[in-house]
Length: 286
Image 1 (cartoon, rainbow, N blue to C red):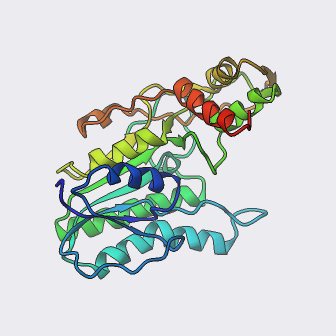
Image 2: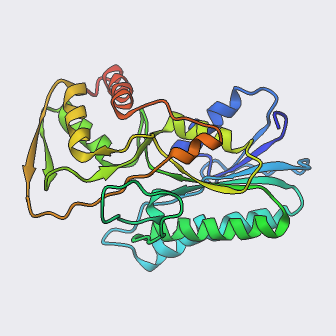
């Protein structure tokens, strides 16, 4: 496996850039990025390659999920990967699909969701990822190709171009601004640092079985814990509670199965926040 080329669909995004950096450390492995953000001719000399599907577009039209945005998500996350694999039939040796906790939607209680939990996506992005899972799984089944789907928790890193509660809470705390929690802050979330997310992809490339894995830090956190951690890491800010009647939403993953890859995320939210804050301070932004 060490010498097998890896083709990355959507490798110019934040996870793709980190994953390619990890792969670049293996001098025996050739890496090809297929992404319109960095256009390049696809090499004709690849006899066989592992395919890693990261393609994702989650920036929607202003005002909501317009038809064009939904169609774009479906094309990018569900249809394009299978079309690409079919165009290179006989050369794809394995496929790893980067999916999302968004396929589950909100859970009614705090119990972390396991892989067999019902898929009830509530966003176009979640629907597109679920369809992408099904489409690539069926293609791989019909062609005898090992297939792994990684259902990622909320991703974050030292640098981010996407907003989530972790990034937002830390930004508020750094400014000394209040972090406002609706309800009692008991809603649960699962996060995964980009370094750990890239490591999970690398582990999935060597997995011989076809399986789905939740990919997140093994310990989900409540929004209250997340806010308190942001204040502690920044040394500033405070937490306020508003709208006590607000519904509590849970999006926590049971990532215990991930050890079967085998892989174990190492960066918890406190360490991840510290790394992010260090970078912000180096750039004079905190």
